[in-house]
Structures are given as structure tokens and as C-alpha cells.
Image 1 (cartoon, protein in one colour):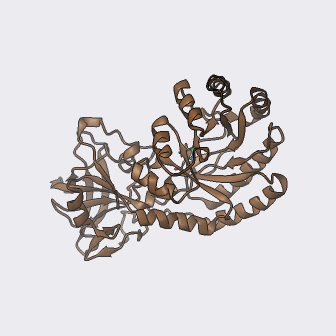
Image 2: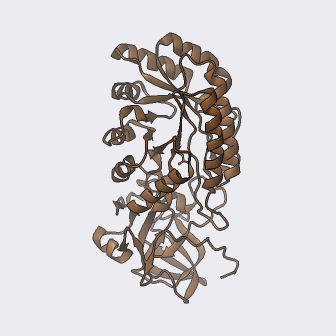
Image 3: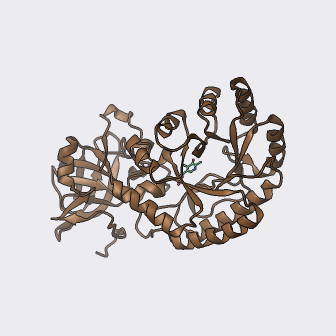
Length: 411
Ligand SMILES: *Cc1c(COP(=O)(O)O)cnc(C)c1O
């Protein structure tokens, strides 16, 4: 339908049977019965497995695949991913605890993020995980704590490069940043690390999130490899790991297309061949969050009421921004755009209409879909927000208006 309401590219990751979306092989209506309440998040185990397989198919075999678990920290999801990836990146001691409960070994877990407290650092040092140091002060603190504990902490330096990741949704490197140590100061810091007797692991360079431009990602990777090789000259010991960050995007909005992995894989293959010559002991890790889980997840809520106001139809649901801030457009969007939203138990139908889907919160910000074309629906039907497996519940203000927490299931 080509009207003034922009259409999303068709999303086909979940099969439809008898007009009902299937997730994990279960018709949505049954899954809702099984869960027992709405709203809920459902994550499809098989889709996560397939996503890792797709990446392995396109990436050079010797690239390590890490999961940045802040994208979706549900323990069952992390456990499933732990059987498929080579490492986990955590950003808090809460996440560290979940990661340490998996089969991933401590030395393949890394801890990033500014403002790590002494207590958090000691826990991580005792666990034997890699600390991605974000500042000079943090390195001094790590050394002191290591001395107290009688071990040499494993440390990587998070580098704030001089370049930015072009066309990324959220920039995390380049220019002044709270993350990492400015590249120009790294040689001096490396000398200090040698003197402090820390166990130096390598570099962590991550510049931005939600990027759908394969060429821009390739350019960033090329610059990251160059920077890593240049800085390695100053290191007290060979670079064992160069963590090149995450940031692979997924399509959310009309006009967006899936990332071209083949282009990224080919570029990485070339870069790896060069690296082999210059730094034969260095391994490369990609730490992906969103790309591994976003498309495997849905958010499901139930229509409570169908209401008309001055000619506009509102579907009022039991779900909203308190569970899914990103879909409401309030997580970093400048201009609000609709996530792909469908009626999960009436996926297709010739009887469509333009509706707005809203939640139960007393604020005009509580919007799930604004003036979108959907199958005609009524109270009791299930609204599904697709592409919801990453930065969904974990990035939402669940205490706002104090409604109950939604359920989460991995099927
Ligand atoms: C959030 C984060 C990631 C993952 O980013 P995605 O865009 O979800 O791939 C990777 N590394 C670090 C340090 C992060 O903070």
C-alpha cells in the first residue's frame, strides 16, 4: 500500500500460520496462554542460533565473536549465547555475575564502562576477567587493588580514537568522550602499565552503535586496525587481543535495509592477512550486542480498548514505554519513527486501517505506533512489536507509573 504512511520492509523471520505469528515454533496465541499474562517479551532461541551461524559464515574464521550483554541480559538468553560465542562483554558487576554463571571462561569475559568502583574492580580482578580500562586513574586503581589481592590483573586499554564511526546511531568514540583513553595519550599509559606490572592484554576500540552502512563500518575497521598496529609499538608485551567493538545495526524503520555482512567480512579478511604479518600474536574480537539478539525478539501486549477520537482510531494496550522505551521513540530518537508493529494474531488481512497504538501511561509519550497501517483489530487482539530483542526491557523505565514488570521467555 503506497499512501502517505511509510511501509516497513517486510520482516519474515517468524513464520505465519493461520494468520498467526509463530515464535519458537509456537503460535503466538498459545504462547500468550502459556505465559499467562500480557505484556511479555519472547525471544526465539533458534533465531539467535541462526544469527551466529550467519556471522560465522561471513566473517573470517579466526575472528572471535563476543556478546555485549547489555543488549539483552536475560540469563536464559545469555546462557544460550554462551554456547555459541567466544566471549562475553559486561558493563556492571550484575552482568558479570550472569556471565560467570555460563561456560565462558573468565579470561574471555571483559568488563567495560566508565566509573568502575573499587569494589567492582576487585570482584572482577578476583574473578580473573579482563578489565577494559577507561581512564588513567582507573589503571592506577586496578594496579593498587591487584597488589592488595596479590595477583596481576588482566588489563586492556579502551582507546578513544581520533576518528568517528560515520552514520552510526549513537557515537561512542572520536572527539572528546567519557569513554576510553585518548589515542594520543596511550603510548605514555602503556609505559606506565609496564612499570605497574599489570598483565597487559590489548586494546578495545569501539566507536558507535546501530550502524547499517557496511562501507562506514569497513572504514572504521580499517582505521581501528591501523591504530591498533601503531599503538602496539609502545606496548610492554605483544598485543594478544584487539577488540574492534560492536555496533552492527538492524533495520527498524521504513527505508532501512539489512546490513551487508559479506562486504564487512571481506574487508576483515584483508585486514586479518595484513595483521598476521605485523602482529602474528594478536587475535581480533568483535563484540556485538544488538545484532545478535534484536531480530530474535518480540514484545507482545494486548489491546484493552479500541477508541475513536475526532476521527482517529486508538488501540489502547496494556503495554507501553515503561517496558519498551525504544519503540516509543524516547531512547535516542530525534524524530519519532514507528518500529515495525503488527497485529500478531491477525497478521494479514484486506481489512486494514490507520491506527495509533498507545499504552496505559498518563503521558502523551506513551506511544507504540503512531498513525500506522495495520489489520483491523479489536480488544483482546495481540499487538506485536518486532525487532525487540535488544535494548528492550533492559533499556526501559520500568518503575515509571509503577505497573507490574512484563514477563520474559526464551522459546
Ligand atoms: C554497548 C556496547 C557494545 C555493543 O553495541 P551494539 O551496538 O549493541 O553492538 C559493544 N561494546 C561496548 C563497550 C558497549 O558499551
